[in-house]
Image (cartoon, rainbow, N blue to C red; front, side):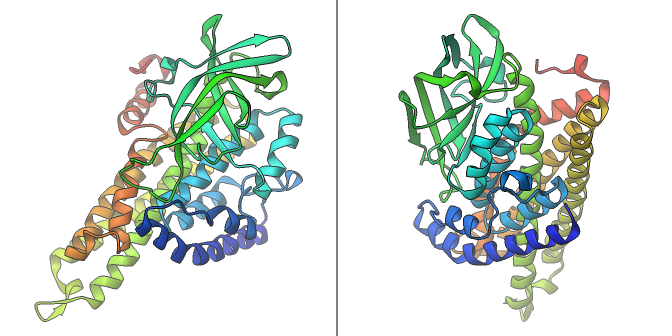
Length: 391
């Protein structure tokens, strides 16, 4: 991506964020989905940021894309989660493992916003260990037939197609990945509304009951689904980490503004040393998270440029896990400190820190829990896969 192209994309993202902010704030207070995210994203042509121009996208590298997600997440984790679901773990696996037919069928439409994508890995009893999922498929003539339930799926209720993972019912250790159209007979969705945060974003579960999928909707090779899922999660974890950087940036901007205006004990609260401690630590979180996100994004770009290099892939996997673990915890702490600086006003969703605190907590769960990422990082440091304790 050229510097001019990157600058134009960042300008378009900024314009989108300026326009979405008042809408998102109103939707949040009314606890209803923000139905303007897609129209405005379409208006500013940011629904295919990582997709090459030949398929109608903007052709962004990972570093530029990470910067866009950090900016978007300043407007709310729910807004950024939509883009992660649609692009980072929706378009990405089609772009990386899809056949020419699948790329032509789904990517241009996804870039235009005619199709919204989601990623269906998590199940009610299979979260941190996807090998415990129970969704199955069988080949019947010129179709695969899928059965199973997926749970806590970002964009799941609004998606037109889902990247879905299932076991071969005749070989239960072999996972395959499919692009499943949600309008297919036997595909039933249900929105999940009892969430702690992100009321403006769609989260859903869905059931597949004898859902037929064409043979050419298989991603990669049959039995290669686990590798596809883990490779996609590298992209997803970088997107979450970048979003969490945006949370920290917005919390810092909010506390600086508030601390210079709010008067207590005869002076702006920013002159009180304990308030300054909060501000200093939020700034430290911002600087460290930014460095780790950019490091992970560069590692991912290096790996993408040389996809057969196993060492570069290992480095990207590790850097993504490190960035996601650190940034999500740093964002949670930054939001908590911002709420504290705001005092009583912080304990209200009328103000941005309170919304960030509610929303960002999920970032320590999805795309790899804190606990799983710590085990992954430790295994890397100790010497590799033979040290993994979560097999």
